[in-house]
Length: 176
Image (cartoon, rainbow, N blue to C red; front, top):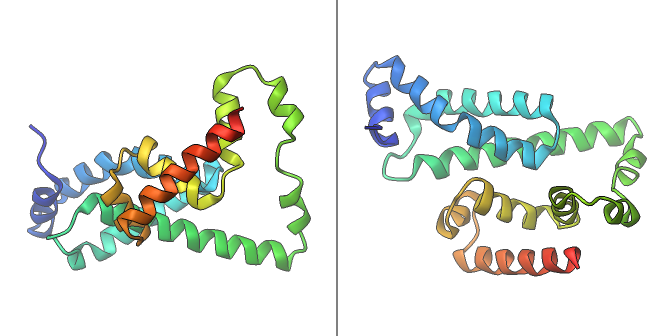
């Protein structure tokens, strides 16, 4: 039987190092998947995921055990991604490489040529605003419910539900 997150945290803070290893193994793939969806680069996603777990390790003593660990760790992941994006954007602007960002978007004709449904869906997702991509990713890739997503993104549950509905409608339009 799997020990709940709360028990693993309690055991780790009491000196059981194995409990932290179990917690990391439990969340490594979901956090990496979330970060990769946000960032889109394997190497940088691995680095950011590592940073997330370092932050978790450093701040676990301050974690409010009355709250959900899953929500907390996804919040750390989201904030770490946002920090990385801001840093990257600044570096790109400083180096005058901003034009390359514009040229990376796939053309609509390329999307029509692809027959693989997964590629079509990925392309349709890429056309969504990042906030909508994030809501869909947290809902369907990371299996968070609307309340958990609201906590991670620091939005009201109604805002999240509204963004989810809009994202699905936009996705539908992008697929037609």
